[in-house]
Each structure stands twice: as C-alpha cells, then as structure tokens.
Image 1 (cartoon, chains in turn blue, red):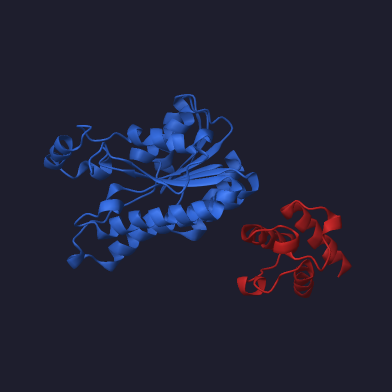
Image 2: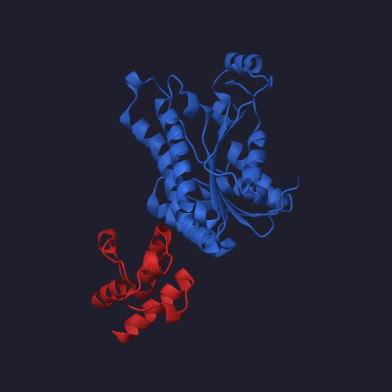
Length: 248
Length: 77
C-alpha cells in the first residue's frame, strides 16, 4: 500500500532526533509538508535540512511543549507558514529515571509536564482547525513502559500510561468530526534515549524478543504513517504496541 | 440589539450549517437546530471571536436558545 499525504500539513514534536526525526522524514517522503518541532530551532533545523536535501517540504520551529504560551505561539507559526495542520504526532518525550524512594518531585513534574501535559496542549492547539476541516489525525507516542511499568521509571511510566487515557478521550470527543486519535507503544528502539541502557540490556532484548533485535526508529515511523492515512479512518482510540513481540 | 442578533444569527448559520429562516429567538440549539455538545463549544468560540468577548463556561450552561445567546452577547458588547 502506498500512502500519499500530498497537501497535508503534519506537525511532529520532538522531531530533532530518534523516533521523531524518522517520523518527520517518513511523512515528508509520503508528500506531506512537515513542521519539525523541537526545543530549539537549531535542533529542529537538522531534521528540516535532511528533509529538504532529500527533496521534501519542511520547516523548523522551536517549542517548549510544556508551556501553554510557547505551544500557542509555535502552532500559530506553523499554520501561518505551512497552512492548517491536519496531522499531529505527539512524540516529544524526556526521561528523568530514578527509584521512587529517591525521586525528586521536580523530576516527576518535568517528565509529566513534557510527556503528558505537552500532548494535551499540542492537541488542544490543533483541534480547532481539524474540527473545521472535518478531518484530522492525532498520534500519541506512548511506550511499552506505560503498559507494563519499569523499576526506576515511575514518572515516565505514569506519563506514558496517561497518554493512553488521553488518546481514548480525544478519540471519543472528536470522532464525530472525522478526527481519529491513536497511540503507538514502542518497545526498545535504538535511539539516544535507550543508548544508556547498556550492552547487557540490548543482548537481553535480542534474546527475548521474538523479532530477535532492537527496533529502529523506522519501525515506529511506518505504523504512524499508516494511522495517519485515509484507509485507517475506522481505527480510533487504540494503542498499537510495536516492540518486536518483546512483551508477549 | 437588532444588529447584534443579525451578527449572532450569521455566526450560528455558519457554525451549524442552518439557514437564516431556521434561526429565531425561541429555537433551542440541541433540540431544534441539531447541535451536539461540540457544536455548541465551537459556536461559543466563534461568537467570542466575532464579538471580542469572553464567555465563561458557567454562563454557557444557561444558554439553551438562540434568544439566550443573543441576549447574553448584547449585554456584553
């Protein structure tokens, strides 16, 4: 199945590297105009430049997804430059790992603010134009950690589980307007975020996952692209786990 | 007042895809004009934009008819 998203404007948060960069590039390859959004314009510009060099259409925007004013400003900038947003990928995420016994409340707040509140604020920022267009796709990047928990990641797990509730509520509120909202729960994907987990852990994943390997950012970008496509219009409020079968 | 009603009616027609003839003061949004809860929210946001006013949720709860809304807006502008 070839997915053609020509004429669609896509906003991807956390687009500077890892899964977000792969998602942004996949959308550009499918013909969409991509707003690469990251904490600094210089970081977002790296992905934009890669897309433009490959012949795609993209623009870079700085945003702090945890800050309401920053989100409003950034998204009105996207709409002014590229047009109304019809697809949003809430991908921005951070970790501040530590056992709960010693977790600082700042680390809790930081992770919840970026990962969960950020998705709420960005979704709110695109709702109006999607409702007007009677078409929209919102894809939240959750995590298998949100489904299963992890020692040392109470804040991250809570934020990623929270995204699943947000996904279902968004699907219910906006379904009548032709807007779907789904979540992807990636397993262990080779990115900067999982780089620090160590070789032992990687070997464990390779030996345990039926797929026999860690995932790549492209393994996540492919189902995101599908969920954003027209043929996926009857799928909403769902979570698709993409983990090579690790948690089976 | 008449001018406010005309502007409110125009916004209602655009938001709810109804004709001017269908919009009179006694019409109820949900029962008579087929609006769902999301339509009402969209309508209120469009009115806020049109008239440059803020309409708090608590006040929206009391607005059932076109007359309720145009009367409220007239009292604010």
